[in-house]
Amino acid sequence: MGKMLKSDDEWRAQLSEEEYAVTREAATERPFTGRYWNTDAEGVYTCVCCGHPLFESESKFDAGCGWPSFSAPREDAELTTRDDYSRGMHRVEVICSHCDAHLGHVFEDGPEPTGLRFCMNSAALNLDQGQDE
Image (tube, rainbow, N blue to C red; front, side, top):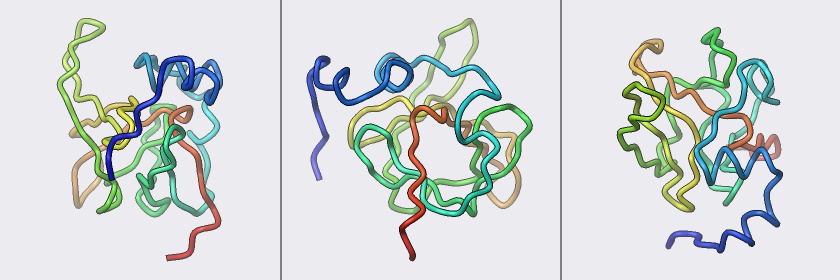
């Protein structure tokens, strides 16, 4: 599957103002404000831009940071990472490989077995509760 490339106007028409700022401009939503930071609902978290499946609810955990956090992506998530030196620090940015949406960052302070914390923005995700796998 190729990349989902859209014009800036097409993204603005599809996404809310916050979704656009987060996914297309790499903004970060305020902690403890997103729709999924404290959700325990089961399902598959998908990219808000292209609908690609990213995380299973089983990998979600409460990291206490105010953003939805996952210990691992789905095997078929096709995520890209790149170094991010914004805001005076070094982080590893997580991007959807299908549409280049900024999703959040990954840190090495998560639970076993991965030791990773995929700290995502709720505005970059949709929770699909209709998929049974």
